[in-house]
Amino acid sequence: EYSSSRLVVFHEAGEWGKSMSSRMAKDLRRMMPNVDLRLIPLSVDPGPGDEEYLRAQFRQARGLMMRHFVILSMRYTTFQVLAEEEFSYIVSDSTLLIGPGDVELGLGKLSDEVRMKFKGMQILDTGSEDIGDAMTVLENFWQSLSAADFPEPLRSIIPCADPSYANCWYADMFADATAILTDKYFAWAFDASWLLHSAAQELVQEGEDETTIKGSLLHEKLLASSAVGLTGRVGFESNGDRMLSSYKLNFIDAQGVSQMAGVYDAIAKSWDFSQTPVYADGSHDKVPDTFPACAPGSFRSGTSCTAAPAGYYVPAGGMLTSAIKCAAGTYSEREGSELCQQCERGRFQGATGATECTDCSEGTFAGDEMKTACDACVEGKFQALQGQSTCERCGPGTYMNTTGASVCTQCPGMRTTRFNMEISVASCVCPESYYSEHPEAECRPCPDGMSCALGSDMQNLLAAAPVGADVPAEF
Picture (tube, rainbow, N blue to C red):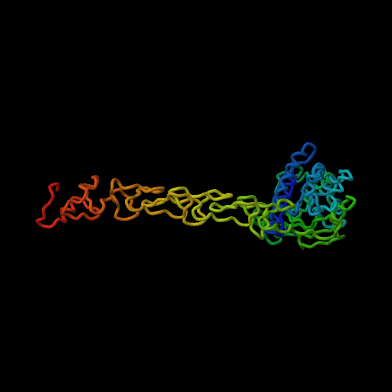
């Protein structure tokens, strides 16, 4: 069901809850790589006094676009808080309760009125296969054993120095048979120990020396072993975790009573339904995997769609739970934008999530769209206006020897320039029909009888004078 869904798992923070949620997350991500999974811890052992903390944890799910919720808790206090009107979006027919039989005990403590709010919810319990009278046979056999009967080859592989076996670590297994046999974890522990013994026995039969049955050799054999035990089929994952063979699915009926619906075979990956589940609305239809997609420009917020705020966008065709900030160089000025707009030429935006772009200041320009900063006008150019995409060249009689200028510098006196876009005062020269005695001197009219071209000075005038010409006295 969860291959394309978003899923929140609320779990008790104690050993059972952490272990179960970790295992569920690992299995789901392995089988359903696309699942969006969030784990939210509750208190270690929810009870009176934890109500406000539980509310705070449940509220975390409000802003998440999650179609399914899983509750890993066995406690009355958890269900009492969930029944509050504020959390009606969690208590629905798309929510799953997981845990031992204590879940039903916790629900059973609620009043009839409160329990009815859980109508249609499903309860998944780790199931055990029918082993017939195997437990009775084991109990009779176990009570006849003593520590001295601890089997080979485990007794050699995990030795004990006490020849009477009374002080060996496994002696407690037989000291009080009744206490052990009635412990609710006994069957699970027995199956694990029994499979370990069976794996070691197989290695002996294959010719392995007892002293070598340890480490990676025993580990690999265990991973390859599988058999039917007291709790059903026993096998291990590659990391050593127990491979559960089946789960029981119950549902809360119209009277608020838990009813058996079916058993899931985790190895065969198939259901065997004893009756069809009835959901909270009275139907037998399967709950859809996901909400329908929101319209372009909107994102999923719980059960509703919310328009992206200005400065954000949501592309079409997605199932996002939050809007995306506009990148630097772009903006969106209104709510519900599907795309962000690029800053026009002459404008820029260096921040993300912007609602507008800014004009380039005097002395700068933006020659392309989507600029995150304006460029300074180069030497020999200027820009006197804001919001421009180019800079202007310094004209005749002006120059600019720095970048980022908003105006060009006028040549001193009556000097002018040979070309536009000059970058130094040294480019300023006397105009035609004038000359100067040196670069810093004022321009003077050309002497009678001489020709002064653009940029003339005393040296080039003398060089240009005809042979035998009368040179003015000032020369």
